[in-house]
Amino acid sequence: MNLKNPKLLETRSFINGRFINANDNKTFSVTNPYDGKTIAEVADCGQSETLGAIKEAQEAYRSWKKLTGTERGQILRRWYDLQMENIDDLATILTCEQGKPLVESKGEIGYGASFVEWFAEEARRVYGDTIPGHQRDKRIIVIKQPIGVVAAITPWNFPNAMITRKVAPALAAGCCVIIKPAELTPLSANALAVLAKEAGFPPGVFNVINSSTPEVIGRELTSNSIVKKLSFTGSTEVGKILLKQSADTVKKVSLELGGNAPFIVFDDADLDKAVEGAVAAKYRNAGQTCVCANRFFVQDEVYDKFVQKFSKAVRAQKVGSGLSEEVTIGPMIEEKAILFVEELVANAVERGAEVITGGRRIGDVPSLFYQPTVLTNVNKNMMVFDQEIFGPVAPIFKFKDEDEVISLANDTPYGLAAYFYGKDHSRIWRVAEELEYGMIGINTGMISTTVAPFGGIKESGFGREGSKYGMDDYLEIKYMCWDIGNG
Image 1 (cartoon, rainbow, N blue to C red):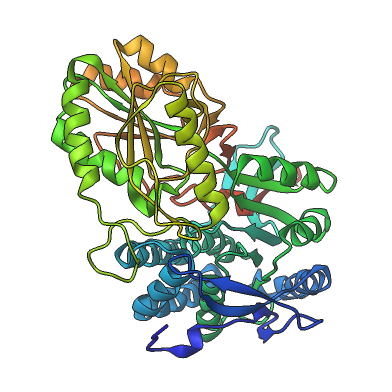
Image 2 (cartoon, rainbow, N blue to C red):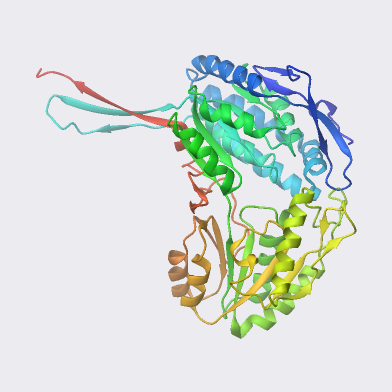
């Protein structure tokens, strides 16, 4: 791995302002999904190191919360500047440990840094209220205060941005953070820690715990009463476990969980733009994103034409090493992930689906490359309807009218993101309001941005990240009633 700033390739955990090895000096391997080669041996920490980080964060919180929003914002702004100055190295680290094309990695670094920039400014805008008193001699004041020590558990598919999107508002609000990155992609978190130290965060304010046993770390973070808030992005299955574990200490919890995003194309849609949006929404990061288009619903009048155009665009995608400039789709993250995609496609084909393009692994095991795939003649009885695919496979369903497609789109326990294309403004309003999802892309396949609230409903979780609403999960509201006497 060729880096301009080699110190960014850090393998130790970061606690109380210092990079440390595990207490027992254990390590675990981080491999490149492109070729399976080991990139680094990373400190494999456990419960005792996590407990230490929690205690140090609690101590740091006493002084960090007393800084003004401007003071905290200045450090955050410096952290943002350092991320942008090192964008090429951060992107290279991300691509080598996660696999996505370098252009996507650079996009993620810029996207992730934008949350730091945004909340550096929002730090000074934590406003309260004055409320007219309920009695003549009473005055009511409402203030907002940081919730305390925050735990953030982040996934492997966006190992940079999922950290900054959580910790930037927490730090801006005056909280201290402990980050448990995914064991598949810890190097991006460590690189952020290097830059956080350089930016000037006081010891204990920003901490990273790396471990190959996430359940051990998660149990300590959820059960420890010092931790007042847990933010998790990952599967619905794990999210439910963490929510249950957090109940005993009644933590404030925000969850961004699985999705089953519909992508709807109505008969009046601009098909060329719909195809462009569909490719972006489906195949970015090899289909391994929580807001990926999962089920494609195309109205019967334009179904054949859309399939033809879309399949042609899918065949044009280039699969290979994320470090190659022409590549648009990299490898999947691990063998377990590609086996699941193979199972989904096999299930669909057994039940009558037709493979229009793709449909198999590229090369033999241990290759993690899967062909970008399009399936037609699919139905509700196939796993591709109700399972989150999390891979480069697009099943295309046919529908007749608006009522039918809304029913199909909402027929899932998930409610994260949805997309649809059409021109009828009345229908756009109706459909947007009827779709049971936290985020809706209308005539666009890209919806993530710093300035808008990111999050879902139903079993896709609760809480919002980004935008002016992003600070709310890290603040407590305190009401003060003053008796001023009769004068």
